[in-house]
Image (tube, rainbow, N blue to C red; front, side, top):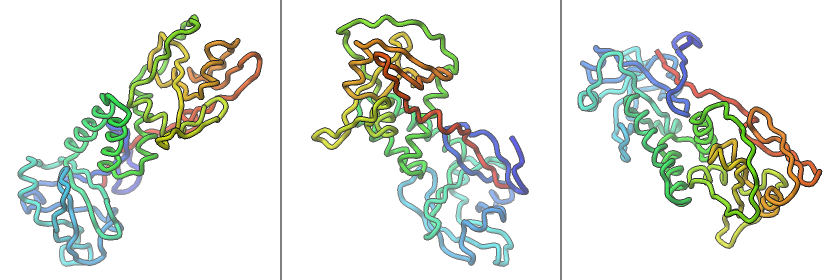
Amino acid sequence: MEQESSGVISSKSQISYDYATIKITKSRIDRGLVAFPRSLAKYFPARNKMIQVYLDDATTFQPKQYSSYTSSTREGRIGGLKEWLQKNSIRSNDEIVIQFLDREHYVYRLIPERDFIVRTQELQESLDSSLSDDEASSSVADLVKWIRLDKAEVISNEYDRLLNAFPTQIERRFAVRRLGRARESAPPNVRTLLEEIYRGHCQICDFWFLKEDKRPYFEIHHLNPAKGHHPRNLLVVCGNCHNQFEYANVKHEFDNEWLVGVSFNERFYAVKQVALKVAREFRKTLFV
């Protein structure tokens, strides 16, 4: 945990997303309100105003009275929350996640941090256990709606999560190619993330095309069958490059377990790996 600036404490997020929390005190609980530090004033109305607040994972908002820093209270606060605080057994020093859903129209979500983390992990588990590409796509859409990020960012974050779920160093074993062997596909969650990241473009030659259903056609190549579906072991490829992996004279070049170059019959190709472009750590920001 580190103090970024006055009134802001940053620490590593427990989930693969950045999020913001505020800490609640006993006096605010007793009065049935949630108060916000001055560092968050720019996210709220400049004057007293009715705002729209979604509580927990509710799909409908409740109108709540917001008192601004310029009012007689001299602090930003949302009132009318006594029942909600009691229902969630909120105690002094508990942290509440605040999502700024629509800053222009003053729409927010409040949820206890513990519940926010649990709900996010439930949606991630739903993605991981998808039985089809359609189920995986639906789970991604649920995460987009819940986290309130655009789809591309959710896809990137979920891919990072899968990378971190595996050991960082894996023993590479030589795999003997078997001509004519059945090709193994990837699990729906991994396949869906890779489809969105590369948009069906071959990581080797960049070839792609759309099928009749307007979705890109691509195949998944496993570099080493012994490693299964580890993200470092998978490539999005076209049919031609997939065949060359199996039948051509192939030489691999790796960087930190990632394939970064490949030669088919002495012809070299640089491999596109988006995971090597940006390394990030997800942060929780506590406003105090």
